[in-house]
Every structure is written in structure tokens, then in C-alpha cells.
Length: 297
Ligand SMILES: Nc1ncnc2c1ncn2[C@@H]1O[C@H](COP(=O)(O)OP(=O)(O)OP(=O)(O)O)[C@@H](O)[C@H]1O
Image (cartoon, rainbow, N blue to C red; front, side, top):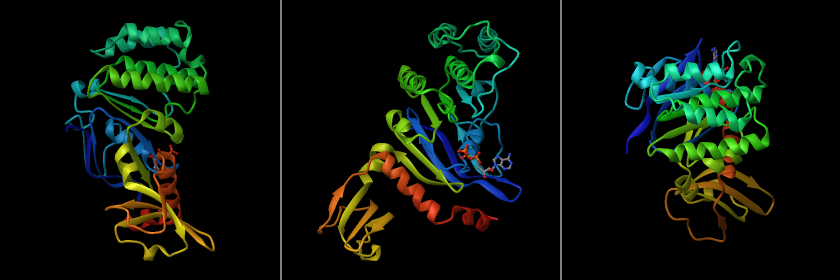
């Protein structure tokens, strides 16, 4: 299977502090990837490295088989909408479409116009006078009209109202399905949104990749088990504990199982994606991820 983003020992450091460290991953083509992690985890850093806006301090990253930003051919195949959804304040909506058409060889002008109409944006309106959510919608319409093979979106729905958010996420799944092998990576703090559209999860915390893989596989490997109180050390070595809670009589664990779930007086169920993500984030918060960064200096 072709990897769209391939990173090996990738790291980015700012003044002795690692924004992203030891990142090794291989994201297959044709996925809608949910990028999650707490504030300051390194998500934007990874997206900026993938589109060539940042250069690595250590390691390598290849995107669609090339170094990011490696010439016009590669740039045309990657769409990126940064967190602050940059648009040109002095240009109108229609100017943006004309500009996009001139700059991008595979530009789909009709699709761009259709999106703008559907959003109810006035083509003559200056982008600087649009609301935050409208600017985000414009930036997304431009990125999609470019018809990229890889679309990188940094918190694209954060500024959208609930209806706009739902319709945008629906549009994303359509966009992904339009062409085989097209890949979308979107970061978000709203796990329910990611659960709706993503089939691949990438969880970053404390500058490190903590979990990566197809959502289905990740869910199949994890269990929430509840039974009489016992210590984590009493569990089978096939179970790696992600999170544990104890009362006087009962213990509950979220575990990753590397073999079949052992027999025992347990109730076991699969977590949903949100349970899984929250368990990993809670674990990392407990282990003081800031300490990790200091250790890497
Ligand atoms: N230009 C910069 N100079 C110095 N430090 C930076 C710079 N950009 C990012 N950082 C630091 O790198 C770390 C990772 O930042 P990044 O923006 O990648 O996080 P994020 O996961 O996208 O966070 P959020 O969810 O809040 O957007 C943070 O500690 C941040 O302060």
C-alpha cells in the first residue's frame, strides 16, 4: 500500500524545546485521518512539516513520495488550510477564485463556484469583511477546488456553527470519495466529529505519536474490562493497561490486548473511538508529558 506521508525520526525543535519528536509513521493513501491531541501537542507542527512550511530539525518526511514543497508539481498535489485560515483581506471572494484558477493547474472552477453559492457568500465581498467562519469556509472551498491528492486541514471546523460544521464534514467525505486514493488529514479537538468522518487515527501528545492506525483495528485491539478489584500487575502480560480506575471492590481497565482476552470473571466490551482517545490523553496527562520534552534536550 502506498504511503502518502512517511516520517522517520522526524523532529522539530524551537530553542531547545521539542514541538515534535521521534515521529515515525506511515499514513496509507485513501484515508480520512483524524489528528488529535491536547493543546500544544505538536499537531500543527506535523501538518506544517508535511506541507513544507517548516523544515525538520531531525529525521525525514516524505509526502506523496517527495520532500514536502519539492517543486510546483508536488505543491499542486497538496492542499493545506492553516489554523488561522489565511485569506487575502483586500481581495474579494471572486478574486480569490480567479487567483486560485491562475495558480493551480487542476483547478475545478465550477466546483469552487458551486461551493461559494451554497455557502451564500457574496462574490464581491472583500475577504477581510467576512466573519471568521465564512473566511474558514472560503479557505476550505479554495483548498478543495485545487483538487489535491492530499488535503491537510488544521482545525477546519473550529470556527463553524453546528449546521455548517455538519455540512462541511459531509462535504469532506464526498470529496474523499470523489477520487480513489485521495487522502485527508484533519486535526480537531471534537472527537465526535472525527468519529463521524475518519477511518484512521493519529494521536499526538507531548510532541510524540502515541497511537496511529485504522480506527477499526485500534478499536478491535482495545477492551474496557471490569471485574473484582485487583492490581494492574495481576493482569495477563498480553494486556497493556492504558487507563485504570478502582473502587473498594471493583477495578476497571482500558487495555490494549496483544493476544486473546484471558478467561476470568470480567465483563469486557469494546471502547468507542472517543473512549479510546480520552483514555490515552488522560494517561499522557498523568505522566506529565512536559517532562518528556525536558528529557529530550
Ligand atoms: N514558532 C514557534 N516558536 C516556538 N515554539 C513554538 C512555535 N510554534 C509552535 N511552538 C511550540 O511547539 C509546541 C507544539 O505546537 P503546535 O502548534 O504544533 O501544537 P498543536 O498540537 O497544534 O496545538 P493546538 O491544539 O493548541 O493548536 C507548543 O509547545 C508550541 O508552544
